[in-house]
Amino acid sequence: MKEQIHPTYQKVVFLDTSSDFKFLTGSTLTSDETIEWEDGNSYPLIRVEISSASHPFYTGKQKADKAGGRVDRFKKKYNLG
Image 1: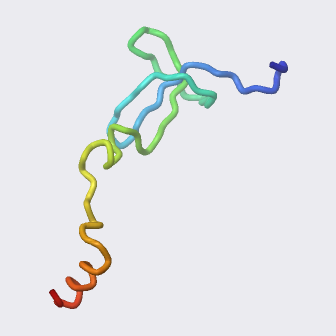
Image 2: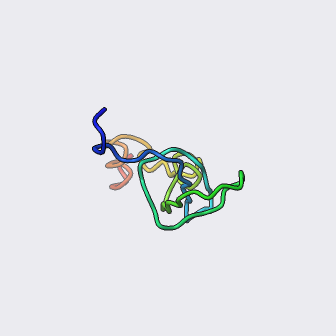
């Protein structure tokens, strides 16, 4: 690999701000904000709005708004059926 063209890969903590879920992983993202992790070390903190802890697909709270096909929705809308 060429020197000084790749971003630095380091351990960072991602914080889901909607559920306060945190996880430690490797990333090239950086931040001025740091947090002390369970192992006693400080890592850069990256705040995210959604993660697997709060996304409706992973939590099972997603709505099934596509029940039935186009014809079923048309019949329901105009009471044809």
